[in-house]
Image (cartoon, rainbow, N blue to C red; front, side, top):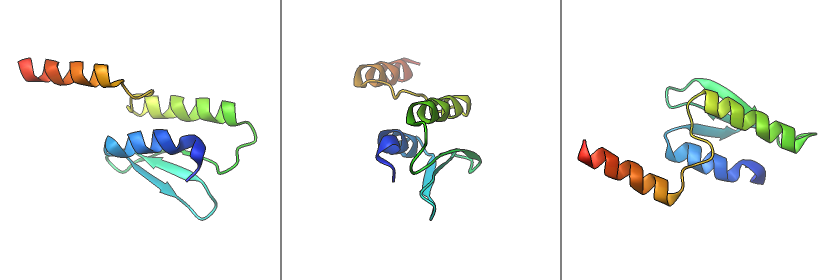
Length: 83
């Protein structure tokens, strides 16, 4: 897996997404329903632009980027307990 997207891929997997690496070095992202969303190449020519595109595509598909902080996660859990 590309080190540029390692943290995002781990977060996506923890949220039920599938992240696969193909033989060409692309990291492909699939939502929890199995629908293809986007990819990240092994060696992009413009890494900053490609990373921005990846984040936008993942946000559009419903993945929270950047991942919430521990404090935000704790707050969300507490809100869920009171309902």
